[in-house]
Amino acid sequence: MTDTTGTLTVAVLGAGGKMGMRVSNNLVKSDFDALYVENSPAGQERVREAGRELTDSDTAVASADVVVLAVPDVVLGKVSETVVPQMKSGAILLTLDPAAAYANLLFKRDDIEYAVAHPAHPSVFLERRTDEEYADTFGGIAAPQHAIAALESENADAKAKAEAVIRTIYAPVIEVHWVTVYQLAVLEPTLVETIACMIGALLNEALEETVNTVGVPRPAAEAILHGHVQIALTNSLRGSNPFSDACLIAMDYGKESIVRDDWKKIFDPAELDGVLAKMLHLDKPIER
Image (cartoon, rainbow, N blue to C red; front, side, top):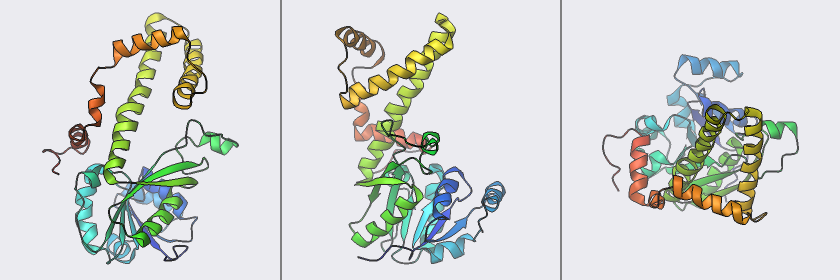
C-alpha cells in the first residue's frame, strides 16, 4: 500500500469559507503539502489573517493529489466542470457532502477518483474530559468525532489516501466509516437533517410555546427540557433506563398527535431524490 504520510499535496478550494477554514486549520498542522484557493475578497482576507498563503486555482488543482471542494453544494457541479479537467490522472476529488455526488452533478473523468466525506460531529454520548472538548460542539478542534465516507471506486490505494486526508481535516477522528454514496445520502440529509435536526428545531419551538404562551419561567422550562432530552436519548438509543408506563402513554399520545402515520416514506429513494433536488435548487428531478 502506498505511504500516505506526508507525501500528498492537498488543495482546498473555498479555503476562506466556513468549512474551508475549518479543514485548513487542521491541514496546516499536518505533514501534507497544503495549497489554499479562495476567490472571494472576504475569504482571501480570512485566509491571509490565518497566516496562510493563497495559490491560484489552476496551479493548485494541477499539482494536487487530493482536491477538496469546500464550496456550497449548489455550486459543486459548476465548480467541478472547471476543476476536474485540470486534475492530474489518479488524483482524488473530495467533496464534503454527498448531495452533488448522489445527484450525478459532478463532472466525470474515468482516470480520477471521487470521494465524499462528512463529519459525524461529536456524539451526544461523548465523554468530554477537558474544557476544550466541552467547547468544541461542532468537532474538528478538540472533541473526538467519527467521519462517514464514500469512494465511488474500489481502489484500495485511493481509499487509503482519502482516509488519511479525512482523518486530518476532521481531526481528532475516532473512526472513518465507509459506506456507499447512496447510503451516505440517506444518512445526510434523511436521518440527520430531515429527522434529527427537524426534531431539534421542534424542541425549540415547544420550549418557546411553553415559555411565551403558557407562561412557564424560561429557566425552569430550559432546566427540565435539557435534562429530559438527555434522558430521552439515553433511554431510547442506549436503553439506559426504561420509560415509566405513564411516560409511554404520553409518548404514544405525542406520536399520534405530531407524527404522520406514513412518515417512513422519507426513506424511499424517490423521496430522497425529491428533497435533494430542492436542496440543490435543481429545476428538474434527479436522473438515475
